[in-house]
Length: 322
Image 1 (cartoon, rainbow, N blue to C red):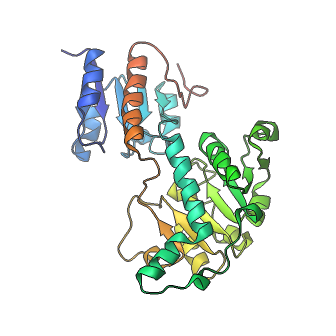
Image 2: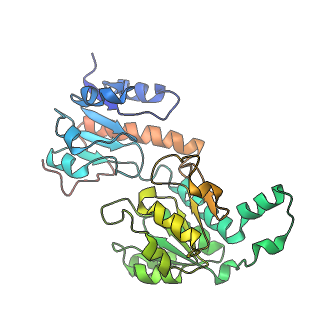
Image 3: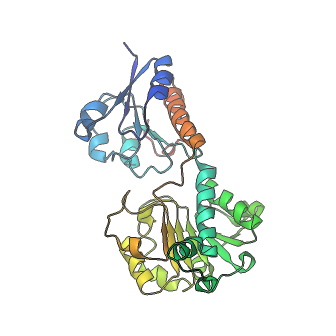
């Protein structure tokens, strides 16, 4: 009989052979929750929980009997009530580096697609219209400003890619000093300055109480009419209805989104009929290599905690009650 029980709240992978083998070697059994209705029953006596999209609320966390760790099989931890876990002395962790370069590359690609109007022109050509004048105006990279909202690992990589292409890069992050940004050649500014100056506003902040819906109609009114919004972070940082209204009202030139307020899109969503909106299906994180890193790094962190250690990315280390 296994010494530990590790529960996977929801699964996005074709199989779990890798996870089962790694955990079995450490004396742990992996249990997959296949029916959301069984979630609480399965995780109640878990030693560790691996979470992807299932919501772990305070009500659920308060009923955990012996859980040492809840780890998000990804970057954002907005699916987990971190405060509730801290009160119960449960460590919360994530794997923030598994797709760092993939997301940075995807964000850069979306910025370039907006700058060069790639998708718009492609669609015109496929509809029988061969006319470069439809793209007027396109501005050169060297006269364009990209504003990064958040300046952690991913946007720092984005800044390097963009500066190599000639873009000027500014950033807003209340937790990052100018001295920290200097090695990247990035100028830190306040939020009001960023949204007024940037030709491309790229979102890279986590979803928190402070950032939820921070991009609303009022913010879009302050942006350049020629500006584009790019989001590869969390969909709910943007008030989606306000973005639709802003695009319809011509407050900004367009948007490129890898994430929406919900994972998926209704067939009648206004974005689908807007020529100035690019949408990818929450794909920024993906490469064959990032999948392998995502799976192995998550399990390695679980094993580390089960064996008495601390996770590498210890989200609630400062607030946990031991």
